[in-house]
Amino acid sequence: MYFRCSFAFEIRKYAFQTLIEAEFRVPSKDVESTKIAKRIILSGFDPNVFDAGQASLVATTFNPPAGILDQLKYSTEFFDTFNIQCDKMWQMHREMLLKLEEEKYDIIMSEQLNLCGVGLQAALKIKTNIWISSCPLDDHMAYILGVPTPLSYVPAVGEISVSDQMSLYERLRNILEFWKNIRSYYYGMHETDKIYQKYFGSSFPSVIELARNSALTFVLADEFLDFPRPILHSTIYVGGLGLDTTVKPTLSNEYELEMKKGQKGVIFFSFGTNVETTDLPKSFKIHFFEAMKHFQDYHFIVKFNAKDKDAEMEARKVPNCKLVDWAPQPAILAHNRLSLFITHGGYNSLLESVNYAKPLLLMPIFGDQWRNAMLAQRNGFGLVFEKRHLLLSSVEFVNVLNEMLTNSRSWRFP
Image (tube, rainbow, N blue to C red; front, side, top):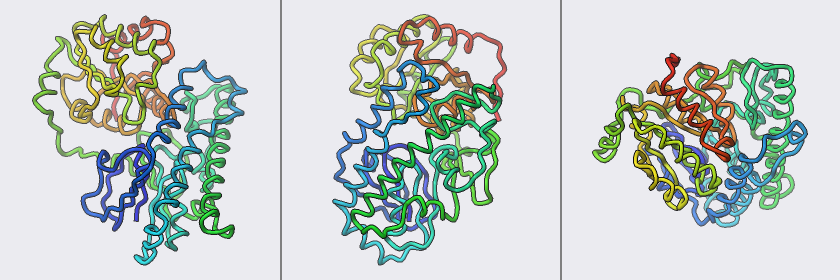
């Protein structure tokens, strides 16, 4: 059995019997799913609950950079959002979920952002859990599992831009970020414990202990692409598992025509599926689109939400811009006329870009994206841009685009 919250990431599934998809935010029909296993879809959730939690992450990312004292505090909105939906899941679907005990599953696979799925192991009396990290090995996972994390050269998976070569001050900030991450996740996990104890009694085992006893940990990262770090024998890297490198993806006629535009090439922009661009500051969008006017020899394909009226209004002022609310990202990255990919730094985008050898300009928003962005810059296939510059003007953004498009820099790809 595999339990997945349909909200944040896609995992291609191959070797399990049953897939439980809890529609915490995204309808299952909008997420690539298994073609083999039996699917059990848990619906009835209010997606606005999750949208509010996600919006809180986007809103704070444009605040002034956090000071060292800010790292002593953490926000709870994101974890509260998960737990509201987890509680709702047991409230609405308890009878159906408990009936699954009759299937006598041997293994359950569950993810790490919230341990609602981990709790199913004890609730359904499943002997073995495989814990899945939807990003590089998260700090709270390493802490719970006892994976050594030398913070002098292993960057925390949080809101900090450091590489594996840190100054003394950066090491101090890295230590504080690591412990902030652990404290925030422990808050969320203790709240998940309360939910399970509410439905199963005070003797229900802690989800932290269930996770600690996981037989294996699957990490959706590439160990040869990642920063060097110690791991355990039970840590298995599976990054790129669903990435088909044998067949070059093809574009529809509509997108093929777009890729032919631009005398010097095409630039693609996307902040992925988890960032609602309607939550981005209006000044950011104004200056972002304004910068495109300086590059008339390039055609821009930019992905913004369909309901983003600010983006729609600004895009009308830029003749060399195609505004879309969905794009076939792998096929665009594979195209030989793509010159640059502007991204938030999600790990799937990182892997796809490396696979098709396309340079990245990265503007991390939340989660593991700061770490991913620094990874691309450290390994020589991308540059990190401070997105707050676009709140004030387009000058810095134009400068970095000029550097990436005209510099004779030799990009390095693994």
